[in-house]
Length: 83
Image (cartoon, rainbow, N blue to C red; front, side, top):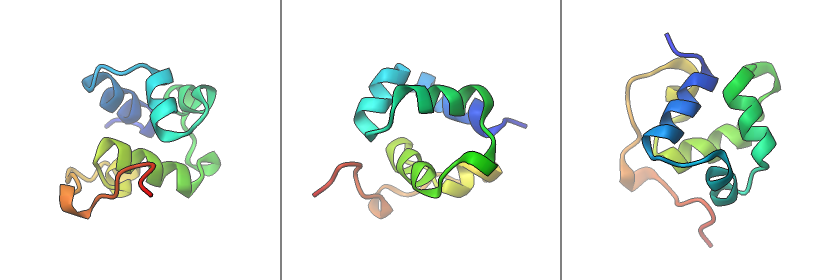
């Protein structure tokens, strides 16, 4: 079973993106994303970060943290950075 960090890294690599590209698109610091991927500890992860990453990768927060095999339908997503 994948950890949160492994899942985040796999989602990023599937889209052929760097940590810096994801950071720029989500408004998060690259070091935060790198730390999440390398040693994600749910006790230190803020819910808003998980929501932002879930929206970016078009998955649910449940998928990120619980390995729920369901991806979020597109019509329920709000693009990151939408006004």
